[in-house]
Image 1 (cartoon, rainbow, N blue to C red):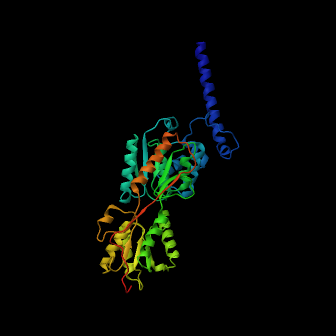
Image 2 (tube, rainbow, N blue to C red):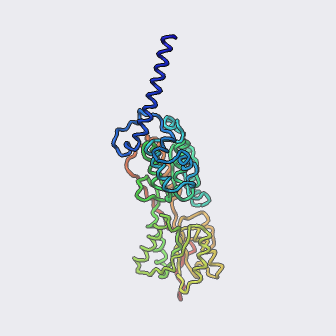
Image 3 (tube, helix red, strand yellow):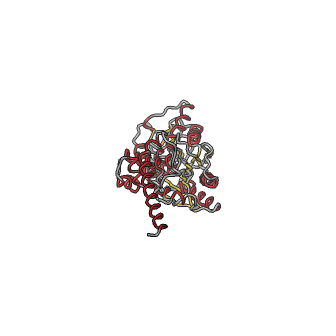
Length: 386
């Protein structure tokens, strides 16, 4: 046998045994590293595999695969264990993602709760314009509420299809998002429109509570003393802030708030239409209503008309958002105008700045934009006998 070939074979055997030893050492020490008992050996170890994630999470590889591709098919506890294991091991869905992460796709992912909602159109337009001007493409993901959406975004981003995430939904699981934005992944993230409270993410939003206070004060200034509120979704952070502003203005004016005057809604036109029937059945009706958004306000007006209650003759109604339809509805809707173009532009600008700065985190950035009261035909003084 050629001596050189003998040495090559011995070297290959040594390299294989060393690799196996390294693998065993790495797997045995995953949990110890998580507790901080061993120094980080990430620069010297092999690329983590789905088997390593399964071992760290103490589940099967099939369960890990399901948690990543179909999170709705596993329990919340299992999803959390897999998410923690991914964080500890540094696993990515694309085995080459660690090296590929040094390259960029020049693309940002925009995730929103409901692409059908007209509120987002102006924001998306501004995001796309800002991104294009700076040489970036835009991908859009339509989400569903809950931890499954956060896991799906994690799967999407870790497979290296976008460089950063612009999130227009405050309902997603903060735990999974924090894992996504922490090392070793460190995906740049900006939250816009809605806030994920106490999560530490960069955020661009508008002054929801203050503007709801201003909307309610407009009704008070017109002379209304019985004022109702058409609510947004119960768990939505924006709806909560607008209710907070409404209650603050009513308390300051020392006006009563009857529980019956807080009408359930969910930001959709149908919910406003349905609330009109409940309103019409009240023994004592408010003379004015502040609706949590324009869509529900318009549905509410339409439903009231079916019951012979006309706006503004019988009731004043004010909305929130200033959708395009608000100025063209009959009567034209008084509303709070959100600076949606500015919000979208600044959110995209913030995310791209993070990408181009190499994702240097400089503390939490929280930008709050002022909204504007737009007075139209749907609000007036109450009737003299009201």
